[in-house]
Length: 184
Image (tube, rainbow, N blue to C red; front, side, top):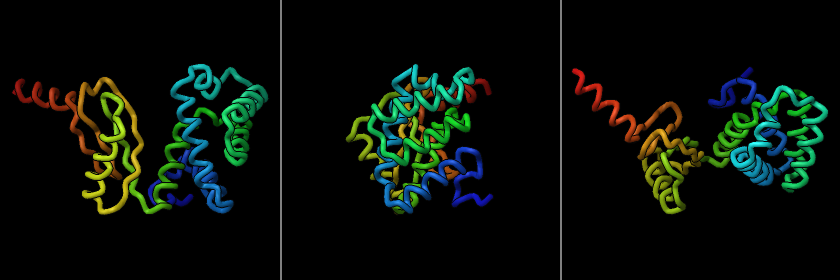
């Protein structure tokens, strides 16, 4: 299978590409992106929802009904709702975080943006995100869509993955480098 411009021909990449093509063909990219952002937030905030999507003990039927109810209560668009139903029927809900990530990369590329994954020790405020986007834009010469994550283990600073390039400005890495240098 084709690598669709950097999105691996993985399971998540294939599902994300299929959803992306349907959304683009139906002029629903914005609606699907908004729905997937809500799903991503729900996965992060609800242990029950995360368990529903990742538990092998939940049957296809139960998962499908539960996903339908969750989608209705969240007000997801019909394309995303149907897509989640397909994932439930195929027992692929566990791949949802990777599918959302891959979809967002495809959508960013469609808008002419470069995608960057940014991991910080603490959540970034809007001003920090805007400054980061400006700095990254000056480095790559085009708009940058950022996928923000937090990892308290970094202690401070950021780790930015921009394509195949990684910029690690985390305090954890600096401390590890210093410790290694001191050992000789």
